[in-house]
Image 1 (cartoon, rainbow, N blue to C red):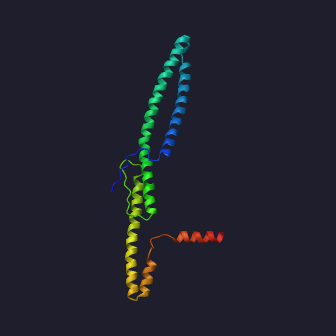
Image 2: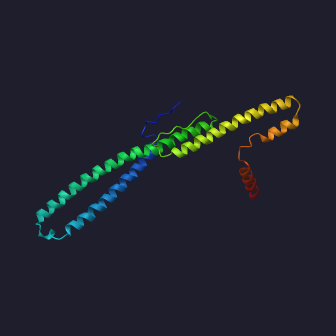
Length: 186
């Protein structure tokens, strides 16, 4: 089942926050560039030869042109950012949905990714982890059947050995040792 993500604002709070930050940065930089260039233009050689009216018209024309260029530039950057954020935040949103299903015990899920997503490697690693868990669960189920057969046949030693091998793929030793250390510290 391929899940197609076509919604561009899947996490609107995050996306609008980043777009707002980007817009503020563009506006601040535009004001800095505007005043630096205006100052350097007004102090350039030959500007003193212009009349006050000509200088005022020059500043008005410069301001108008700069405003429109900045507005167009900002619109293009923000539109491109929406698509870029879609390639980052969209997969993160999808990962959250998949992880929720996994935490509920559903290991039938796979993570689908698009070629242009920025998180392709993460999706591949998560798919590998999910597949390893699936395989381990299958192996454990086989061992449980073997344990049942060993108990039914009266071979308790074999059942104990198989039980010891059960869920060995979990790396719990570190977590258990950290837990006992934290209990000792209390």
